[in-house]
Amino acid sequence: MTALAARRATSPSRATRVTGLIAVLTAILGLGLLVSGSSGAFELHLDDLAGSIAHRLGLGGTPIEGAGESVLWNIRFPRLVLTAVVGACLGCAGTLMQGMFGNPLAEPGVIGVSAGAAVGAVGAIAAGFTFAGNWTIPLCAFASGLTTVTVVYLLSRSGRRTEVVTLVLTGVAVNGLAGALIGLFIFFADNAEITEITFWQMGSLAQATWQKVAAVAPLAVIGLLLAPRYARLLDLLALGERPARHLGVDVERLRIALIVVVALLTAAAVAVSGVIGFIGLVVPHLLRMSAGPGHRSLIPLSALGGAAVLVWADLAARTVAAPAEVPLGVLTALVGSPFFFWLLRRTRRSQGGWA
Image 1 (cartoon, one colour):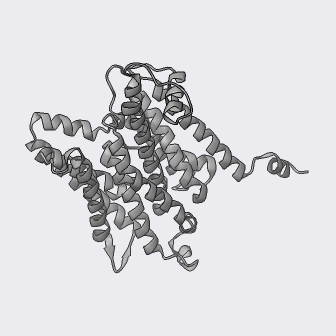
Image 2: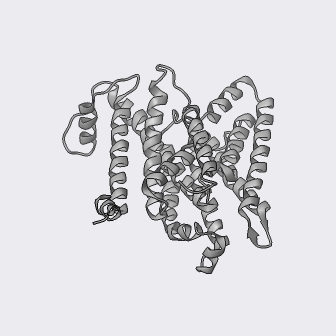
Image 3: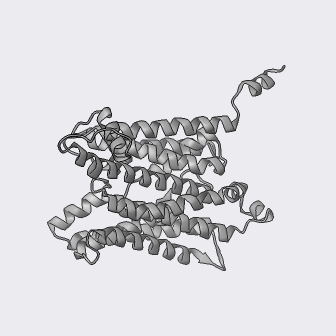
């Protein structure tokens, strides 16, 4: 047997590698949920968590004495569930964006959805809108994010086609305009509104409630279920637009569908969490390095990985400077920025190729 044949015989298959990654990410996510559920200003033991969950499920167990039961079910668990949902949305959206643009440096903010959602939220805060109660800011952020993506697509469309370069440049221009509008809103806002705007822009899940989970979950489920349907088409698109067209792919229709799914996932996440960057950039790229470029496995892996990473990031945000809380978006940017510089240098060395 040759050395090459020996290596092939002893190396794990791709399916085995993907299965192993799913198991590892599931374990990381589960451990993160347990540790985060028991950590914080109000310390809880793991056996308390197990007993409380068993009690709620009617499997025996005992509720936590005192305020612990309320802290766990009304504060900790809604935040954990919302964090996992937001992370899954951002991770999945990042994979779709990188597949659509054929570039590992792409992320959901490229098409303006994050900046557009920020404009809606900041505008609602500065104007003092309260027409939907506590839902006013998330609702405005979601609507503004989807509107921004629609504008970007329409402006970049020419001759019934949309070129990737034009889409990116239009997104950059719209992101710049969104930044100017946010600055204008801040200029006219009072001190209390500026404080709220700043906190929202830095990203946080501190205001998580079961109501927000219920509002975001249907949108997240729709987006996460739709995304794998485009896996095979994304694999064909990776060959290039012209080869993909020869293989029967309607590239323009595919691009529209992907933009809609990305906008749905990202706007839903940003509407309840503020701007949290780099999850959609870092997670898909790391998993592509480990699992390979096939989107059939990469899309669900990125959703699972995004949830796991954001749960641990939120735990760090709550505990690293306790009793204060570091804004989640700031923390992910501090960790994600060095990775982006490394990725940029690595991509330039490989002349823009995939990892």
